[in-house]
Image: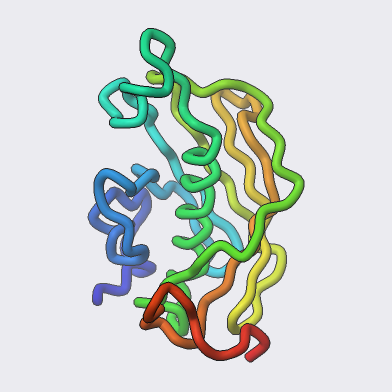
Length: 165
């Protein structure tokens, strides 16, 4: 596995896929433009009309689903956390979402700027403040909680071991 943290910014899809496991059509970040591993990341999501969700959400009036904006923020946060040497090759999972507010619609042609600030990071648990903007206007903001399970096999969809270390 390449140590992408040694590579110059911006990171494009190839470098991002070295850090997180997401692949097309579910890789929702296109570029990382700033990173302080384990602390902060700024990423870009270019919203394009040919994305599969727009065929049904909504015909004739494409709007990016809020859950996909949250997922894009989570993937950016995962880049920050999983780029730490001790977390490389691991999987991070949602543990919760708080204080989520959608402020504007996002449509094809928009560029989402995803900014994540990690507020707390223990061995298995973390909390991050996440804000997505379009042209400086907040589209969505939330506090995201995540776990990095001890058991990375996730057999049966359940992680074993406690989240407290």
